[in-house]
Length: 317
Ligand code: GLN
Image: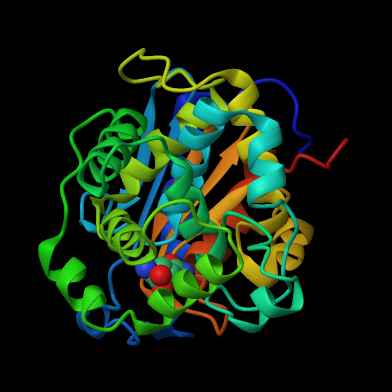
């Protein structure tokens, strides 16, 4: 199906989401992330699929109310908040919008690009983006992130303290990346305080349903279709989605766009949000990941639903 008009009728979407869940629930490929110790304890059987339309209607199957840490998916929404504050040009000049072709926590990518973080979806670029959010202190920066992401979700998001502590104890690599950014004059604020805010933002607890609402806000020109609040502008949604298309699934972003044809963002706890501009968004949760850190079942289910719901942006028939 071509990507024209709105989502199919509600009952059709309900049925297709249920079918996608049934179809991929048995896939056991991939492995749960363990470089953040507490993530290794995730239940690999969990699988939730949620679609929210720009009309605010929800369609879901499986574990859509199970909470998990948002991890890298936070990067997409912090980028939107920073775009809203500083504009299109600042993000392009200070962070960049090109894929590194390398893993999300690569140090070499920074070195190869003369200290440029390349894009806001890898750790270096996300730390640089969080640092750009105007705030007088790290505490205020964290509150702005939490409040901003909560407005995308349409409810107060809470920190998962266990995930935060587990990652804060083991994030030497992100601290090194932040120090390296500082050495290249790429950070105007304290590097370790910024990594701490970034680590908290990654530990915000969300559900697959929350991801679908957050994505639907980007699909709806920045208006949360559930609360009606204008969270960011339509221009900011456009810019954010362009970055997600090129960089949202790390070095597999090309594969993803080729198969699914939608801007999206994944995270190492097993979440994926995929956005169909003007239509709605899909939130998926399943903790087993491929080698790049993307949920295996989440990718399969998104591919199925993109085809069945006619969401691929590049399809004309
Ligand atoms: N908090 C994680 C990290 O910085 C996020 C990574 C991810 O989801 N890919 O390593």
